[in-house]
Length: 141
Image (cartoon, rainbow, N blue to C red; front, top):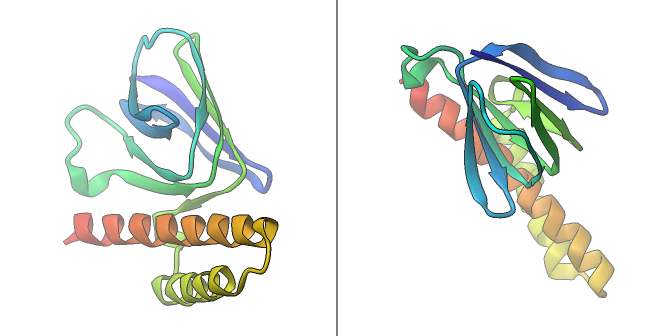
């Protein structure tokens, strides 16, 4: 077991001892377990998956949608500071779908590179929120 702390500007999203955390990084997904080597890296837009204990089945994992930040592993603690983190249970699928549709519309109507980049970031954000909500629902069945 090791300590996992997930913090966003809105506050601490998770702070507990866990068995494993899977994180999206620039180089792909990485898994962190107890006694992981020291590491500082970038977390990208994607899903953070938390397994609380070794014997836990997939149905009890926690899922978070995140949009970028920083990972630090040291002294058997994983700290993840992100711009945003939404727990799967707090994501309203209908609202996320509507927001994704609006983001696609903004992207289609973008007149310059800055607007296009902002719209793409929104598309990515809402895509990952839907993915995480669907992961949670699929694993609860």
